[in-house]
Image 1 (tube, rainbow, N blue to C red):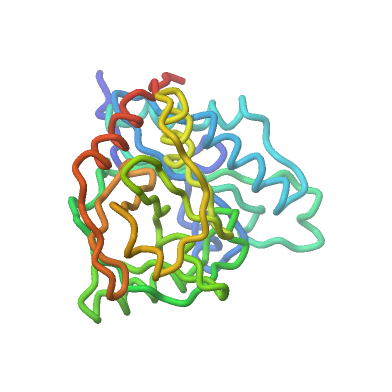
Image 2: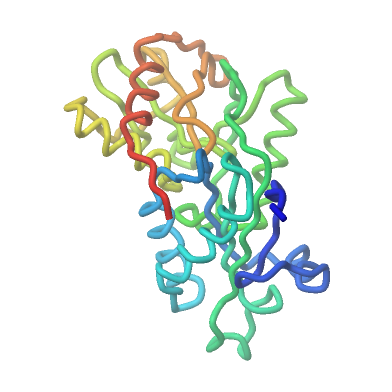
Length: 271
């Protein structure tokens, strides 16, 4: 008998998760994760996802699970699901908490899958919000501020929100990295932010293309002299942004095509 693939899965340490096991996670905030898109049972940027989990685990727990173990857990979920799906790997302390008793215990791994996503079509208009995420270089759970500012932006007639730090620099958006274009060079914000896996993919492929890139402090005033802006995350290499706050930004097709060309050049990997 052929088993139907499961589009929605939740597995802890390679076993189907029970409600009892999942309940503590609903009330815990000490965990980190990475999210990816699976296409044809293959993943782009797997090395970047594993590096993210490794680095965050060392920061949170003082130890990291072997890459081979994480690859096996991811592979099981992919093999048990459809060819195309969304997949999230969350690393957390047993019981969903981090106490003195759990400091020397190996963290658990939750792998969840769901329907594939390509993100919104855009273009997007972003509200400019003064906000700095805690532990910005780590993709961690429990960040209600991101959702709060998204909802506030929508109520104000925007599609999403971009964050401005206390120095007046644009850093990132709610669940997105920001990227800009001056007509010749791809510009990444210089601020405290999460280095996204899609950002890493695009950066290394642009390097291969010989496209100039630089990091620059981007203020709201600086936007007026730029030729394009976009957001990206694990869903997509680029969605055009046509305004941030009250500043309108051009929407050059060449910039968006460049971001997608960089993503398309990244090889996808079977586990």
